[in-house]
Amino acid sequence: MRFAFGKNWRSFLSLLDEHRVDESRRAICELLDRENLRDWRVLDIGSGSGLSSLAMHLLGAEVVSFDYDPDSVACTEELRRLYNTGDKRWTVAHGSVLDAAYMQSLGKFDLVYSWGVLHHTGAMWQAVDLAQQCVSPGGTLLIALYNDQGRRSRIWHGIKRCYCSGAIGRRLVIATFFPVFWLYSLVLDCRNRHLPGSHIRNYARKRGMSITHDWHDWLGGYPFEVAKPEEIANRLSASGFELQRQILTHGLGCNEFVFRRQP
Image (tube, rainbow, N blue to C red; front, side):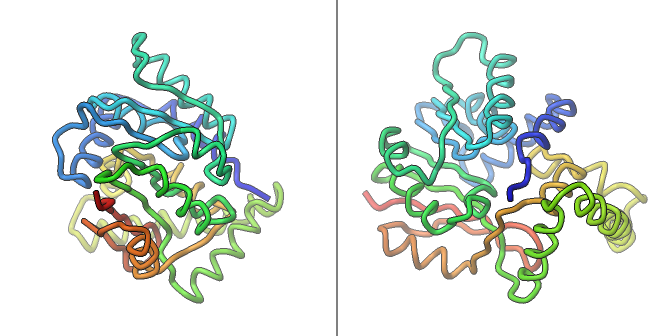
């Protein structure tokens, strides 16, 4: 049982424009506290739509992108075709982060990037361990993983299973939660004294994403695992990483981490 991530990303590509690309670049630069990625070799694990790979390529990096979902691979290849203009410093492949031999074959990278992916593999901790092995000494690991909310996370696990159980389950979950999400967006606008609809209209500022596609991703994103921030920090610290930055959520969504491997 698995959510069709690639089909969701294919739909998202119809909305992609220069504004979303710029927002993705800005978000990556802010997280890394850098103006560019010139001369960096970057691995994008779970490239999805290809937007982050594109952003890092435009920031000057040599990018290797791969995904487990063939539709996601096709999306990334489409973006490379549209924006790459023959540059061979961006390669796209089909692969699994859980395939130890494949991961070893990729070599070492200045930046290993995996935003909101490893918790959907069905073996999150194994995925984290294999991802960090690709970081070169002195290199950077940037990951985002779902926040562990205890009982709430267990409830969401059931909701996601229902969404992925078939057409009836998917329609039931969408019909139940999309109105709730719309209402919550309006509540946020009122709380922040913004015009109704502002939260939805401005959502592209979050890494260039689309709110409705993210809603589908959240409701259907299965397999689904979660982690506490201290679990991530302790596990990577034991592998020779130092936490450089973290952005934590207090509810739904991902905690973001930037680690540096000791030289």
